[in-house]
Length: 184
Image (cartoon, one colour):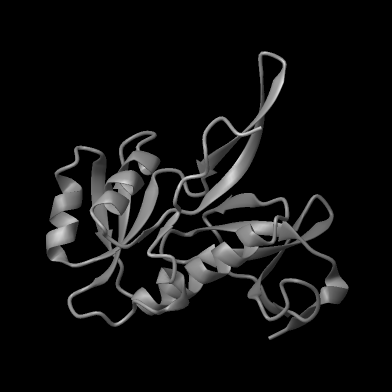
């Protein structure tokens, strides 16, 4: 049972599909928020109609003997803003932002964020991976994630597919069987 209704994690809904890319003056920014301010900033951006992406995943907790599900940010402290200079400055005035990092490769970030959202939509159990190192690049050849590309990682004797957001040097991983992938 969720504590609160699910919040908007992407605005507008077609942002990751590339429908909004190429708008004049807009570019990607990684907004690093103050502690536990990601959703509040996302609500502010949504109410001001500023495009953003905040990847959220479900986390189950036991509170006073009741099982509750809450939505938590996948990359703690980060909201991805797709805006112009004026929207970036208005974001800074909220007093919820620690710093804003300019993304030099917006198309690369967009591709990484699409892959992250695909993994979130798959409802597979995910693990956040920090400070990624380059490894074997593979493509999934079967199943619901067919066509997705990532890096193979071995942890505790099991293979995991890591989808990285290179700009943050972080990513997420999902357990995968070796027969489902092919080298790129």
